Length: 191
Image 1 (cartoon, rainbow, N blue to C red):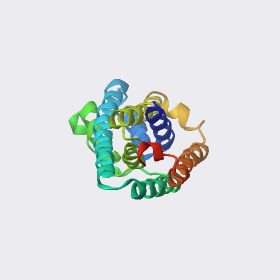
Image 2: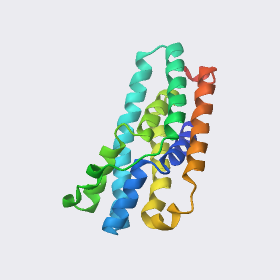
Image 3: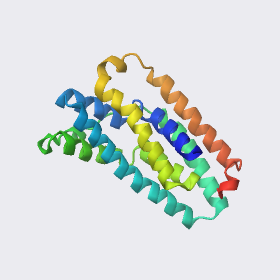
């Protein structure tokens, strides 16, 4: 349950103001069809984060517990710093409209999420918790918690949420996880 809850919280916070959330705003404004956009975000996130979690699980099989602890601790600290860097949306992420709303969303989100903060976080969380299913379910829920409101209420929410505060909270959580991992907090989990 811890893997699910931590994954949900971290990704929900990290996603606020992230490139894929900006993409959700753009798709909602462009198509004005929230259901296929939300369905596309869900399908894309499951596929992308399942891939990322599988990589995380594979990484744990390659490293001994001591090396893994240092790699994960450093990764969480790097994520803390990266979370503080604002994202911007690339033009190529929004030029797929010829495929329809759902498929455009699936493709654009999958591509935008490649190498993104939340995907890297999913790799690290899967390596940390050794529970691919719990991590993927948690990170997917986190993505949906951040992006569904963006699709439905984007303009109304964007001006009322302090991105600096949300990014700061996410950075602190990543930093705490990093320090805790480096200090051996995951020793009982083999990390």
